[in-house]
Length: 431
Image (cartoon, rainbow, N blue to C red):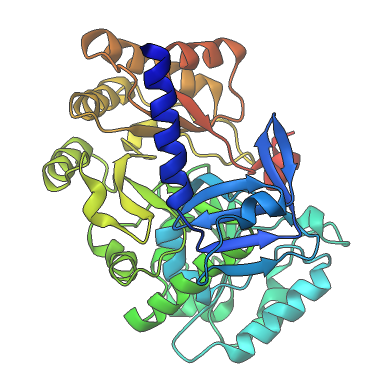
């Protein structure tokens, strides 16, 4: 009887499968399947947002109908879409069109030329911005730009250039625009460099707290809503061009919920988001983290996100982090010694994690150093004893110096690590 039922179920499944037809078929391809039983194939059929069948051209073409779009890959490699476990798409999209990128630029001379070109086309009222994604070791000259070179390239157009998480430059016009003077005090754990006469040079230094850099960047003018929509679409298109089809958005500083999500909210309603985009909510203000997460939990039905899913693209709140409490943030500025987290960290972090676990909210924690991770794990283990995680998704972000012992602790708790390519830019500083 069991064998008969199994055959019946199998035949029914095959019949249902046979009724499905492909919206798109890619042929003449080298399809990477990541399936040990069939590592490569020559064709693939897609229906909606699902892979329908992978295999030979003959097998795949059986799912064709008169409306199926056929793409000849011309022998090119076709890979599954890439999933980025840690990116800041919602925040980054709002500013993408304002930024000059130095990725892949091989000489400082060319970088400065690009800076000059950007200054010439930057509209009145806006700034030239280079926001990370480079270091001096990619340049033939193997050095950073000087403030004199930056001033010469940009003239009277306000300019902000971010270098890793350690420093930034403002040109003369930028200093004036932000009204920074010799009397402007240094922020906590930050430095506004002054010359021998006490005037700001334009160099901002994180010592080691990057707040001085992020808060300065946050003072720069935003785009209009229409421009933000275009900027976000351009950013998502660039992600698609690089093969990225899914992202976990890790929130970000100065990214307030729900106001700063209005652009992606509107694009989602129009069905124009072309990456899966579950996102985490990032605590913004020291001292109010527990209050904020309590409010957000009451605002968001995390168990029923289907209403925010259009065209098969997931866009919804999926948890809390990467900043849960300010006391747990160990800034990843490898130009300075590791910061010591305050004694209040454990109690503050525990209250927030306990709230999230009780409400079955996945969470993630920014932690660069093994010493910080050890203390984070002490808290998570304590919460787990009182309120079991029971398979709840949680992550440590970054974890560049994590030990084998802490890897085992994370595994025992059912957690994971979201690793980025930060060492590609900071490796020399770290060493």
